Image (cartoon, rainbow, N blue to C red; front, side, top):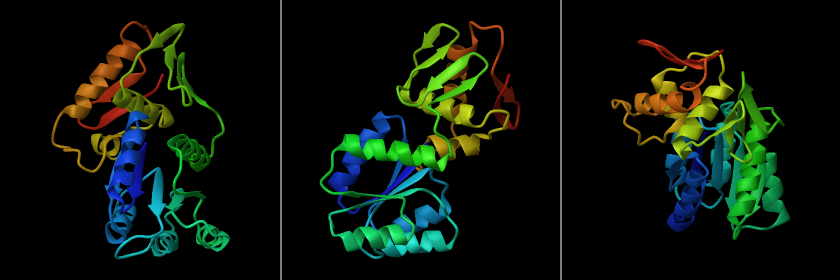
Length: 222
């Protein structure tokens, strides 16, 4: 899953980015409102973390602009302001949640997970296809009675495939959802990761789940 952080305090942004990447999310950072609005308009994110006090364009104006364009990406406001009026204004403009600085990363992560589940219109904590199971809370993956060890990026890749079963996913689609905007799409990194993932989830099983469509992309299906 891909998250955008719009935060002008570089230490705060770096702290959040590091924590989220450790949780296997792909993360982009914008350090001013103008860049944040541009990235929010041009890319498809699963969540946006948006500071209110930003240079060039403030957070509320970004929020209003995105919602006026029918961009319904879940947005969590992050700010030092703690007045009831600020919270109400942000929520009325279309924000999905609100967190006041300073905050514990564990609380931020919990709120992010709730918003992501809500954004996917799901309350379940596991994804399944055939006998392959992915736990969205513990990040444990198993097939049959065998637990499968994955790297963070392999986990993110598998989650994207399992959320899009039976759909053909191109390399561009995979890059946009699993890697950040600095990713070079002209490399074979995606193919390498898919091959590593396939070996882990398919090699020792008779039913293959991850299939290659030459010249097109990949599809996960029974």
